[in-house]
Length: 343
Image 1 (cartoon, rainbow, N blue to C red):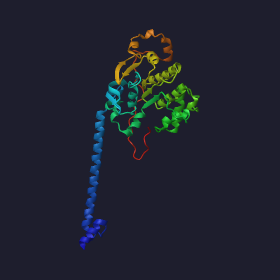
Image 2 (cartoon, one colour):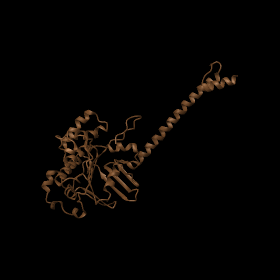
Image 3 (cartoon, rainbow, N blue to C red):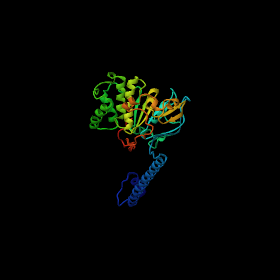
Image 4 (cartoon, rainbow, N blue to C red):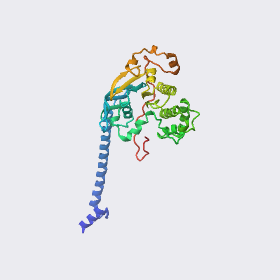
């Protein structure tokens, strides 16, 4: 009978204290043991997490003046096509860099790997010292917050006004309505579209649409601006205005990478040029032209020095890139049951 009572007390947690003193003592010790075990498990979890973060920090780098680093990077697509092969280069903070080369040479692969759209087959890519080849998928949106992107086809929201297209970039990062009301009109004034706030994209010229794209990319003042053929669909005069705008952004300290086929613009601006061919970096020159032959032409022989001075273009062989630009924002810790990070 007593044995049966003990079994019932154990199973249902019931029983008179006077009748089941052993069970009460056992329950008290069990609770103490469970509490100790929970504490040990919690400490172990924290220790493992700390070790993982420490290991990650050891593998990342102190980026100093290098914003972008490709370390022996190779990208092979599923069909066997080689996008990049053994690419190694470094881009300093505040630099203006042109990526040039024929169609299919690897420019778009280079750009899209920086945006974490493609994974490297091997090698490492560092942005602001962080190895993005090891970046977890839920961290990618926070990486992209630090990168502005301008594309040849603009990628505007056709059913949104100019104001709303630019405001969207702020809203998805959690900006308040007050910030949007302050920043959007300001950036649209900077790109010369203060009178087009309520127009839709199909009511704008190609050059105006690209200016909206640039405003959207720069409204958050990202430390890195990537432009993929930004003047590819524009006439020469409009292209000059777009490149002047991008150049002005660069002079604020933002690092700029422009993939382009616009030989005239590259020759005219004479910035750093990285040339790709068949997935290989075949040339990396400062104050260079589109081709190595043109790079040998003295800048004084180009014949438009006065015009370039007016536009803020032209070679700057002795100048250092600005280093007082915006900093990369650290990844916030993910929120438990919070909203998803914006892409």
